[in-house]
Image (cartoon, rainbow, N blue to C red; front, top):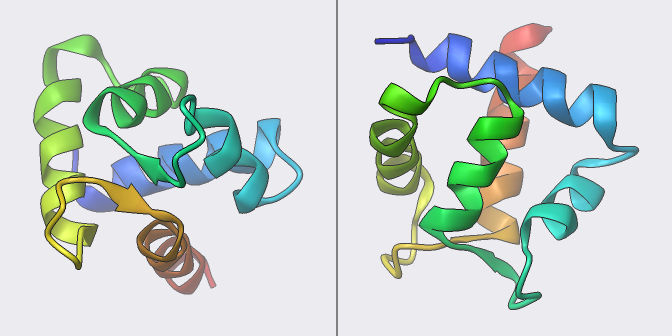
Length: 92
């Protein structure tokens, strides 16, 4: 299984290489425009970040479990930003 740091690093690379800002990345993956990322939307993000299909579902569940602070099984912008800030802190 990939480490949390490896997964977050792959997400950071995706955001850095394909989007101008984390907000742009969030908006791109928030396909229904509800301001929250569902598990399906997170799966698409992980696929774009080149996380293999075999473990993608488990990782999506773990990301929701780890960053979903309000308990709605979705990742809103504030929760997504928290994950991005954690990535930024680790890479400095």
